[in-house]
Length: 258
Image 1 (cartoon, rainbow, N blue to C red):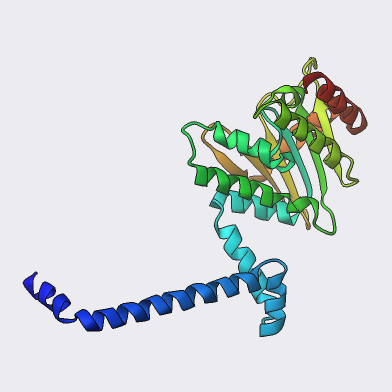
Image 2 (cartoon, rainbow, N blue to C red; image 1 turned 45 degrees about the vertical axis):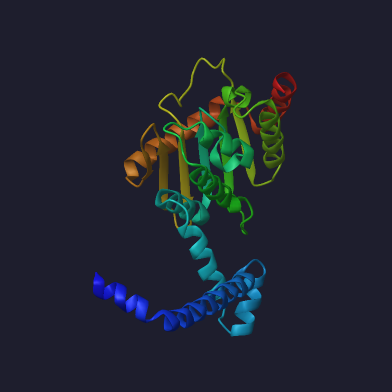
């Protein structure tokens, strides 16, 4: 220990010079990182590709880095959603993730127990919103959703959050490649009693399922299980209100609940 102390004391002037050099180096590095961030930002990253002759690799790298921030199970599901030509989902407890507003999604994550940290809440909300690119992709995927009536009435996050969420459903439900249906609470027959589900059909005929439970969130690959989910989802859609009736129903609920 004495040797270390003596060495540090004896190198005081040299250490000061190194310290100044380190500060200058860190400053230069931080400035360089800010410039890089500006170049790789949207739409700047495309300009960086052009300037550096990277052929689109920088834009792809930026997207990969952004996706890496999200949990693996979210990335796996988002990848399938991005490749799907057909996507169908039934949601029984809350508005389906792809249909949620940022405020509604945040309310769900904030009420989670054990509680998430603020940083985790931000990360999960960002990941959920990032999945919405499926609505904008060209050519469009065919997207269908069935929502339980109770999910339209439960004021998660407050009445204003609910109203904004219902308005968003009406907006999305009017897109030509999207159909939203409502399963009324008074239905005497219901094929969705086993819980929420999601089906994803890829180009080439390959299909996957996805399910969430209390402590489990998994992608389903077994063909027989996927077939079962497909059968159930078809019956659920047949039992629900039609898309046109559902939009009118959502407007009615918005007037009653908000």
